[in-house]
Length: 488
Image 1 (spheres, rainbow, N blue to C red):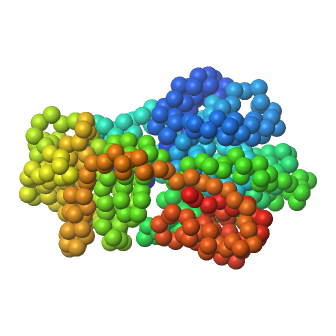
Image 2: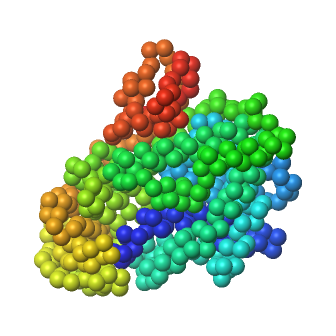
């Protein structure tokens, strides 16, 4: 993987892959077959289907009940819950609709879930994928997913070109038409909610809650909030305000929302106990340490660095923009220092100007055969100093890329320590690592937001995180008997 890929992929890959109803053939000309072809690719690369059969069946039933109101119930529709902590939903033009486990953890009732699904159904029945397909030379979604992720994961040549192609699609023609298409999907989704008997205001409330949650996560990470750089809103440029306009339009035509239902209890019962955040397969963040129980290693970042995890890489960043990126490459048969000079550096040089390679040396890190080197690179925002660390671990080459500004020696020293914190996990450590789970409880008279939040095993901003996941803003509080979500 090239260094430029690492810097771009966190935004481009997540932003592009989840864009709704993109780049597939017309539904009436065999797109069901294309959707069936791409479905396994999506499952393989976006977490797979959730193992909770009852929850999957429940989400499918909500989707089918909405499809029954469209006049297209005879078409093949597939509703899938992806086992991913990323908060998102998307659809293929062939009637494959996806929601993530992360989205289910944020929604508070069935009406909110139905609002998301109804919006995606709106994209499908409006055939929003057709013009985009033509503009992209009839490339299939599976082709683009495979090209981008294949290059990023495997360090293959051409990954940078694929990501640049994806960036042009995401920010060019697609973005120019997304607002119109989103408004159409809003209007269809709202009408479906009304006709099904749901309160469509829940859809607008959910989008407002999503915006608040993403703003909080940016605050926690020390980054400035921009909804257009957030995974969900990059591919769903919808807001609660605009959805409310769609509701007003529907009401002006005679449909009423006041008596719609939410089905909170049914929904909360279904999501009680689901995994919250990452699974052992993806690795777990606990405080300032990243643990990977399946690959059996950990590494720790310094104070002031915020850890972010994804299936492809782990990134830690501080408020000065210094960052360290952990990812993996194939096994290197030769000397580990030659991996840096003969494989890694040439890949970096394809995309950025590299100068002053120095301090190439073999070391032992966590008892593993390793190598380190320093280089200077020139990025659009200025020159950077990069420390490259390669660790031979089992059948993988673990890579740690530490990037700092030239004048930021303090962060550079801290990240050098982080690079050397890599170590194998003992069996008893692995046995004690468990993912967090979401629990639904009924609020007692003695419960308060601070008391419930304090008991959650989350790092920082606990009360704000509790409010974000339950839809309580600063002007609203719990009442005895309310159903709320906590993390255990």
